[in-house]
Length: 215
Figure 1 (spheres, helix red, strand yellow):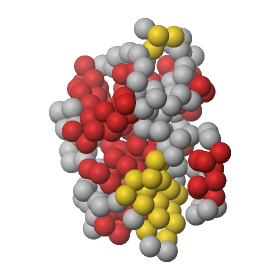
Figure 2 (figure 1 turned 60 degrees about the vertical axis):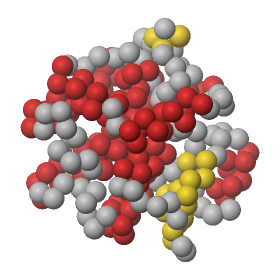
Figure 3 (figure 1 turned 180 degrees about the vertical axis):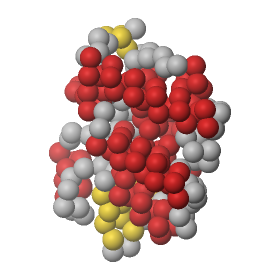
Figure 4 (figure 1 turned 90 degrees about the vertical axis):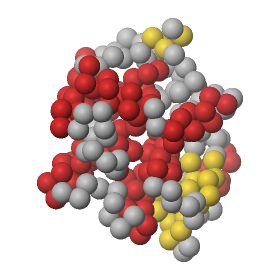
């Protein structure tokens, strides 16, 4: 099984699929491509109808889009362990994952993931509203599951929100006390630390993701 990803410093969607698979010890080989280069599009075009990452090859099957990959891995390799076991918790976790998948556009546009950097940025009101919603989500789940993952045990929803935690660190955004504790839980994860270590060693620069000014 091959997982095609972009630069670890910048590629949020790649991180989501990679993180889930790595946390659950799913065996795969990693094919890393440099974003926004001819080779990036040429290599993906050989195998996929959509030239975006992440993208997964498992035998004759091609799967693209991070959430679709996570769902496939959950069904094919995790026996459903990628979601909370309680049906109501699972429904909420899926709702939060879908909210991240389709929402928070101002935050994503104004605060691109850039693990190597520490930046100062002036945020729009829309981005501030997105951050307030993130704070609300993390805070609410920490009340129920203090110092743990969003639904106690690690699940797909945590993989969906992990790039947000890295963005908050880059742009020095503090949340409420309980929400910050969730961020600390995420940052202390050895699997994520492995991704971050490799991101810090990269030298490629994607100009459109170099937002803000150095702190």
